[in-house]
Length: 226
Image (tube, rainbow, N blue to C red; front, side, top):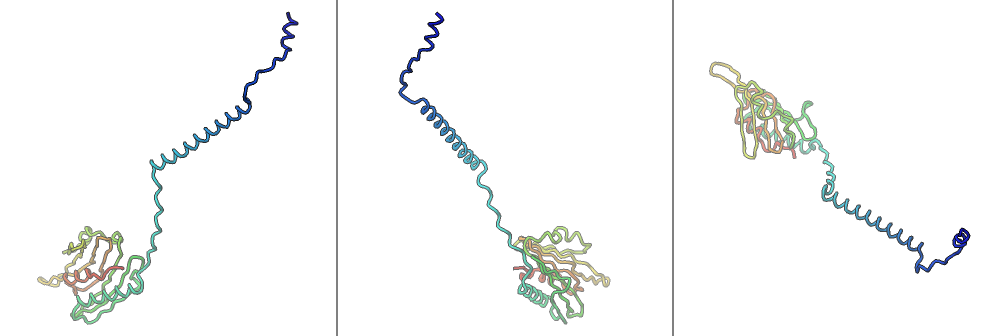
């Protein structure tokens, strides 16, 4: 019996034909699996890109570089000096002398220009004024309008709201020369525009400027940087 089993194991029975190559089938299956994986990965990448675009949108465009701020040009300086001279000539009729120009204390920086004036009015009173014109967005460099009248121990304060949103503040100080002689001298005058540009007139006018004349001076439309 044992010999029979041994002989049966040694007999080679030919395999029936399969009609295909098993190795080729295995290779084909492997290639198809790889293609499916690549397709799934591509779909995942596209889907992730679409989702990111929907959720976050395109990134912000880079801001253009800001134009450098430059001090007023020589032509602009000359224009402001001429405008200051013309304005003072109007509010100081009969003056004995008037000199306008930059001094060592007058600022000339980006967005800002100052110029000074010395005068002797018709009555012989001497005065010194400094005009400062600031460009848009510089209002934070000067005292806020709601603080001007409170900051000075003034006896009186001009408070005007003019057309176009312009605001004017001028504190006044009283000098008692006699029982019925009260001279009002202006302190520092401030003009504010809606675009944040400002005009200030500082100094000493020795009583030469009345309220109307001071308002006329500080509101001159030529006092603006271009």
